[in-house]
Image (cartoon, rainbow, N blue to C red; front, side, top):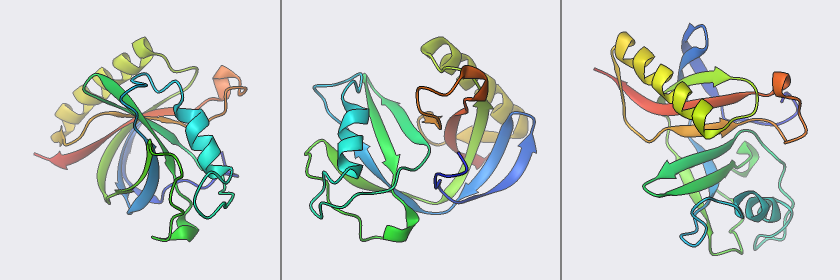
Length: 169
């Protein structure tokens, strides 16, 4: 993970597997396709974008994490744009991709290892929700899954997080 850029943040609270972070603004390229609600083509489409499938035909460095967000009855997937682009991000060629700003703010996370799956993600969301309530925070967004590793990384070395925008009650 150390060789890949990730969004900048400051840890405000650390409590075991939980953190409250203050993220700076950053940009993502988001895959959103109503005809692919399970985002089966998401990673390939995003990989094509960073492999020069953009208007500038520019290769873009891989970053971490890759985000997945459930919105209603479908999912979205997003790739973090390297910070050196600022606001001058190459426009995607694919109509299912768009550049979005991820606004700065407070976020809570729960970190876990292994392969992520629906059952583990639901368990971690519930743990995070209970921890937030106990600390006086309320969620302000959907839960977002953050995946940090390529598929070939062994389970014990994998890092995953559930992230949610929060505010103090």
